[in-house]
Image (cartoon, rainbow, N blue to C red; front, side, top):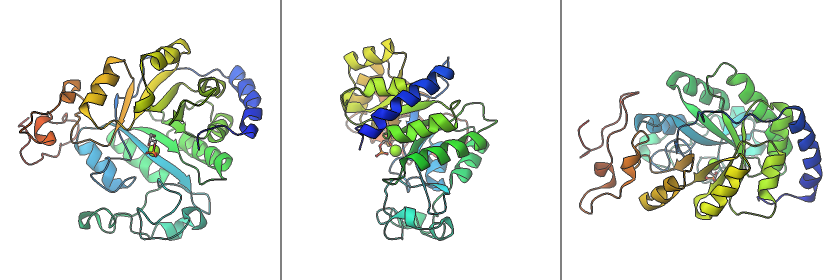
Length: 306
Ligand code: G3P
Ligand code: MG
């Protein structure tokens, strides 16, 4: 749900007062890489697991999006859905389980045998990965319904502590204004972004009231007019989930600041020329230039020699 409730609307006055005390500073220059790997490595590895972040990094990605929610005992961990069935060996609502029980689930077998036994990941483990790999994170606060306030508070507090010495702070994003309000109350120094699947009435005013530095939209609703409106409000523009070269070309032409993609094997983040559609006879992986050499990139069968 991405429409603010009446309760949220009432709390916006509180947000405005907080933002007035500590106006958001839009990082300049913008420190987030333009290409951001969705859920770690898109669909090539089990989403939101360490295996995914490692795979994304092997393709040259430095920036990663992931989904963070809370266990029953308040441990921030990575999972997209409220329920466990789609991406783990567990059942039911994830928020009902203690982290000790969640940590024993298999979050890899659903994807493929190669990843069988891959465990769910805590935010603490993600911070360790980020530090070891000079990774930059976009933490999507993904509350289990009804826990928006608590999840925003706990994730923001944990992120502030875990990334305390990081050169680039994590960008906290959410579809839920309440979660962003809690993040603002808890860790106003961390940059925030409002996620928009649709451009609901007043959305940009809500983003401003929450002291957001950016808006992250479904790429289908981004156009020149919206890009201009965001610029006029001093908001950066990011889009999800951009998997087709034609979409990427259109968005880059609009000057979009960040593209969140599943297609880590198609888009080489260091080379925007890589968004050219692949020749008809070539596979997407073969058409894309190799990833940059920050870490040892994974060579795909048939990929161009570096
Ligand atoms: O944060 C961008 C994108 O991840 C939002 O959608 O459903 O993939 O979390 P979803
Ligand atoms: Mg997400």
